[in-house]
Length: 401
Image (cartoon, rainbow, N blue to C red):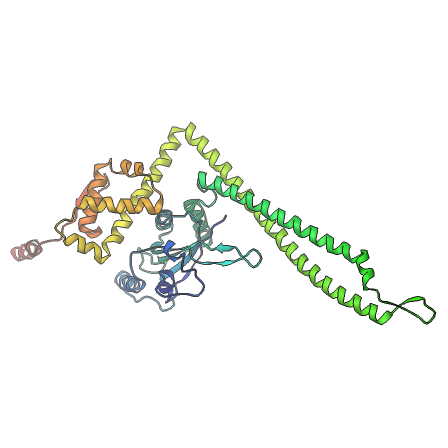
């Protein structure tokens, strides 16, 4: 299964669609609870920030034809997590300066197959991005190779070629079972089709011949009645043959598609086995993969904390006398673990680092604006100047005079 990512100008009603702010007739409402959402800013608020920054940085207003907010629809797998998409967002920002501020995972869209009546889900995610270049204040300018890089990053971060070892094998078995079913259906159809063709040439058609005796007692064929019977029979058989041929072609096409899918899954399993073999024999690569994974866990914890702080319910808890930062972090980590299938051992590894604990505690209490991390990984609090401190420079200026 392949993924793709293609950014276009965001529509004014994107948030209504992405965050399901109203009902749509093309979605399955029973699957809507499986959707996931994350928002750092509303589109209107982010656009205002972009316009203000552009004027501050370049001294000019944002051009009317600029597209400072863009949106991409990304093809995902059923088991793609919000963490995977945060990882993709991080790479897009690091390598292409594209900053994602809204993510919506949709699992309630798709269609029913006309032949099998089976539900065909359309798993995808919407990424809404800030397209402003922070160095110039203008919109980002990308070349063709940058767009190619986006596809590479999407495939790498979402692991569309590699997948998960267990799920890959399970899906492989499921597809093989489907192929066997389709092949049995195809065999039944072929038998029915061949049977009908043989019936046309069989003695059954002798029954359509109408005979009558002449005045001498000889049996003669009544031509007009016999032709009428044959015409009716051929119309019925042609209709059935056409319907069976259509079904036959559809089943054949489905088997071809399933065979392609199973080949891709076999390749995924082979890649996973090769990767596991390399990891088991190379401690250096194993350590590198472990660091990448833990960095992604840290990234999703940080983003989730920032997202939680935007909610009214967070500030209600913060004002409570029973509020404990450790309990809040534990609740957030439990939520992340459930939504992203992260093992508890990963959190244990992250929280072995005291500097990370300090950072997350201050992030929960103060938010991003009041905390910072030094290059050495230590945490420092960025305090706002007091009224007394803000007046000191003025006093010094007076002394100079």
